[in-house]
Length: 254
Ligand SMILES: [Zn+2]
Image (cartoon, rainbow, N blue to C red; front, top):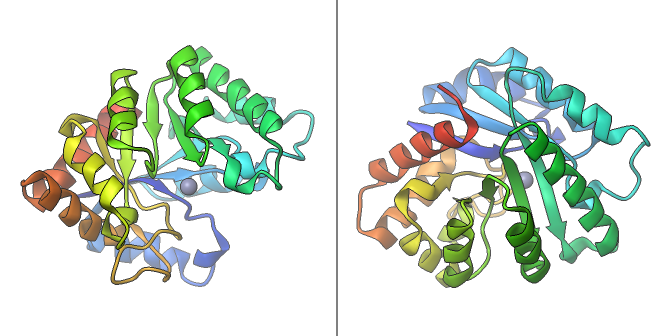
């Protein structure tokens, strides 16, 4: 029972074998749900196509901070138009990425992020948030806007995780918990309430050890779940079950 709350199966990394992987391999390996993330204008439509082709795939539509610099004038309307689709369950992937600020300046990132937070609130949908090297500004915006949703690939401290949960958000954890320098992530994995934890990959990126650096897919989630389980002193199955239940609750998937 594997639920991947965050993947990018529209990525060209999957062009060679997407049909077989999504149509056969993942369901055979126990993947019961995936939320595919859009990131730029092109991936909006691709995400909808994946949702329509595969029963267990749902979608989030939005513009990633790395892709927020040169958008067409009607970008927000085009995102909004897709929210009516029954399998689009969130606005994402949105947020702040100060590691890549040369791709898009901070002020523009904040503007595009806030517009999409507002869009999600108006449609009563959760958001999927990306926060890289922007914890201070991110927490300021989350305190002010109090969205429902998840901070994916959570990279803050255990204390920031506690505040994030208090604000009503979920915490997404994936392959990073298996990395050598994962002490922070494991503290978060151990301390977050089990009903606020989402399992995820960020496929094709963030493959867990021993596949680090290789192409990632949702079937590798048990490797991360095992690390989270060890940190909490519970079974891997408990973590996978929680990841599944929590994602269904947050995204309104029955
Ligand atoms: Zn992502």
